[in-house]
Image (cartoon, rainbow, N blue to C red; front, side, top):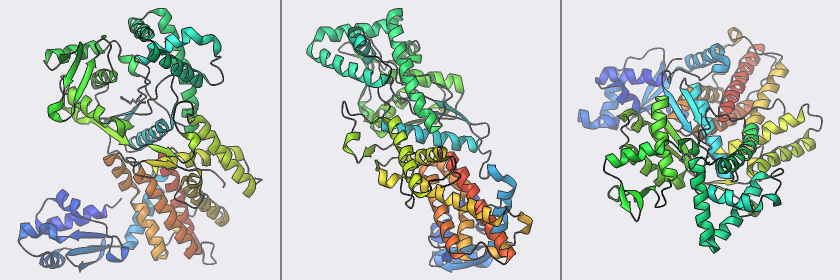
Length: 568
Ligand code: ARG
């Protein structure tokens, strides 16, 4: 596809003799299409040329060689505004979509590069909470998008399946297992046991030390203890899998914390040999105060390791196993300090600079629920699986009211309900906290998943009415030059750029916003332009554009993890 921005950059660079990449990085998209498609802020060059932006703009305008790509150039303030050739843009975009169809927007910029994404990573024997849901959805979207751009991607579920709390769990299980069936809601049973044993530990120091001993036994591989621990793991994974199935999320590896149990000694030895481990009341710590990162415990006074130690072992293992270019950690921002510490300490593990540079925490904000019963205080835990089923049921009820004879209603309700929840998790900048409110999530007219799906279904029904997707050779591009069509075409043109910025910033919300923009401008186009038309040329052009929009919405939604319904 013609890269208009680059083309403009090259033109300016030719005249100014300045670096193309630098010039391109200055080029902006004006807030209002009346001011052109691209704008060059001439004040950026004022220092270099010791001239006013106005003079630079005039000189550029005079000397730039225009060609068929650019319709005209205008000076506004210190900006040089470029109006690209609309007809050429229309032809370029639609031809590209015609040629690439289901692969529109994909590329191979990631070829030969490997990205690891550590995401979801719930803790076994604990509920999969609504934060893990957001995490899973963000990680999975990034996974899909990196892949679409040609990267080799490895999704890792770094399960929280290790740590002293399992010593407690085992103790509770030994004491009270007969009181539970571990069938209906095994995780709730585990939680109950956990709360009980925790209370007991608070009352009785002796029990606490028994629990610590238990964990040591798990670490040493004592068959009885390991068996109980494995049982917790199996029960939990089965529960988590139900959620992953509903969301359509997959992983390439489930190597969680326990996987590193025999790989931590090496970390400790390396740190020891570098002389950075300090003894502190029997524990081994690393003092990062000078870097403003506090103190990181590596080994506790009772000899057991902690979360951070296992993350260090994981870095070592991943660098050796995967030869990654990036290793992303999709984890809540509460763990900012943890990752700063771990990445700092990783510098002492003798791994190459390439891997150290590739480590990156992708923090996201909390999810708050408007309904009280959803709070995660002990006892009243939001069950993500229930939440997903509730979404489906609510949608089904809406459909039953509006369209009781819909074919395949259950499947459509699932796509819409799950899609709504996924979209809600992705539509705001991920670092921001997110509110979960059914009225917003399921609003068919808001900036929501169902809205995008609704617009998609509308494009489908347009094509059903016109009978088929016209051949591109029957599309007269000059019939798509009105404002509304051009707005849609501009957005379609930007699809690949948006995908690139998603991975530049690890920000899937950019794609979610993009799909809203595309839907809204299609809706304007649809309202202003009669598609079913006596003039077949007009009908062809407009229905072709409708098809292109539907296709792009479907691809984009799928990348976010959202399936499109056939009807709505
Ligand atoms: N299990 C942790 C939690 O629920 C998240 C683990 C994230 N991944 C990592 N490599 N530390 O908070």
